[in-house]
Length: 105
Image (cartoon, rainbow, N blue to C red):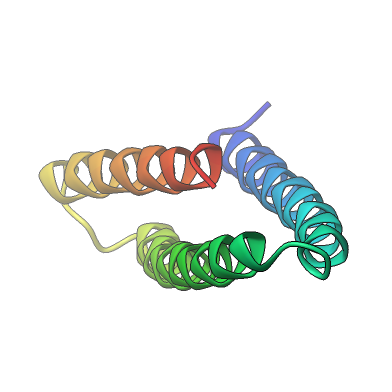
């Protein structure tokens, strides 16, 4: 399997994991909304939870945009060996941060 194919597969897996996390969060949000109708304390918790999850979603989306940009840059064949190593390092750091944010949702 070529590096590009491996990379594409990794990107696909990351996108699938992001979607699974979003689906999970949507399900939990719906459950909280139903429960909070009978508990005023949960209304406060729900609002804080929504605020935090929205902020994390924005962070993940921003990191994903940056990651996609670096991946696009990486495909350009006009880079030195040093630049390619740096881009690979940046890609790895971005992917780890995205995964960390998604795991802590």
